[in-house]
Structure formats: C-alpha cells, structure tokens
Length: 264
Image (cartoon, rainbow, N blue to C red; front, top):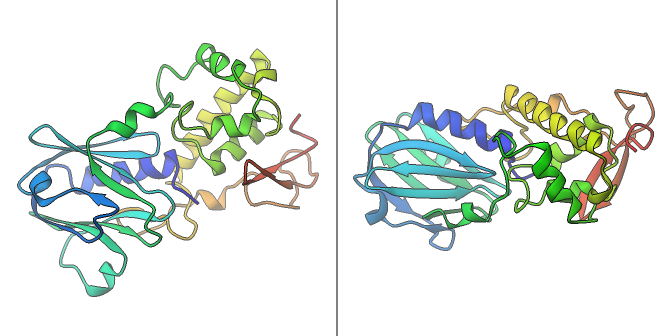
C-alpha cells in the first residue's frame, strides 16, 4: 500500500522535529536511477523546513534549493540519531550524514524517487486541507467526468493525497457507492463527501497513518490506523453501520470495499 496524505504528513511532522536546523555534512547516492541528487546539490546545506504536497515530501534547503521525494510503495525516511549499523542499510538508496545523526532513504521495491526541484508538484490537484477544497471546486471537478467517484478521488491531478485506503473509508462514511459516476453526485452528497474526507484524514493523522508491510515513521515505529478501519480490507465482515456484510470488488484495478446496503 502506498503511503497517502496521513502517512506522508506524519513523516513530515517527525522530520521537522528530527532534522530541521541540521546541516548536511556528507551525502551518498546508492541508486542513481532513483536518486537524482548529487553531493554538490546538498553537502554543506542546512535543512530549513520540511513540507508536504499530496503524497510528495519537500525538503527545503539553504541556498534556495528544494528536494522532492515520493515514497511510492515502499519508500521510507528513517532518522538515526547515532551511528548507523550494517542492518540499517540493507535497503538504503540515499544517506544524508548530518551534523547530528543520519537521514536514510530506504526503498525495498525501488519505485520511489528523490530529486532536485519541484516540477511534480505543479501537476497536483487541490489539497484536502486547503481553502480550495470546497463544495464549488469539487462540483466543478466531479461534473466533468462520469468515471466512478472512487477513481476520481484517487486521481492526484484532481485531488492530491487520497489513495485507495482513505477513498474507501471516506466513501463509506459519506454513504456513497464507490461505483457511482462522479457527475451524478448531488450537492448534498458532495458536501457529505467533503466532510467525510476531512474527518477520515484527520482520524488517520491522529493514529499516525496506516502501517502495512512497509510504512514506518522516521523513528522506525508503526502507525495505528489499520486498527481502526471501517471497511478497508473488511471483506465479509459486518458493516459497522447496518450489520450487513462488507463487499469487495475491483475498481480501476484496485481492491474496493463497501457496504451495498449503506452506500447508494
């Protein structure tokens, strides 16, 4: 499962605590295909801030330099306050030696990336926690397509940060069938969906994201939202609202979980 807004926001918050204000003393690029960053780009630079846009992390450095990173399926940013052990580096793709500690970019499956610049950010849609995430803008997005609403929610060019987990959860909370064409949603459904998205994302943030196989926080501990799922991965379990059985279908190539009785 790819880290979504709550996971990346949690990583951002931890990194702000651990690495902001520290200086990069050395940099090792261990996979030049994934990591489009050189020593000249970062060595000697101070980490000024960590930001997030959608599922992308932004590392702001002194000298007006930005790094952007996408974790994809298995990327991790881990902070080690002391020396690195060999076991810490099995899946390391980039290592930042700081004036205090190390920041390591791990990636088992090698789909993630780290690069200089912010071109990818320009392609992203509206942020769920921004003022642009309002009924008017959502109506405009939804009326332009008859694609299933779940697929529209997951389209990063439309709305940035929502993936499979939280699209399932938000649609359940909003009582909307994930297969419903986006342009068929009523204004009241759109309002309900907007509020449900915010509520689910905030709840997932409270539990610091969903840990499955790969997601870890920078302190190497797990998130806990997987213990609070409403419908995600709950095939044939009782619906927490009506008691009927949760159904699983494949939509756009992704597993989709919903209650056929509650979600219309």
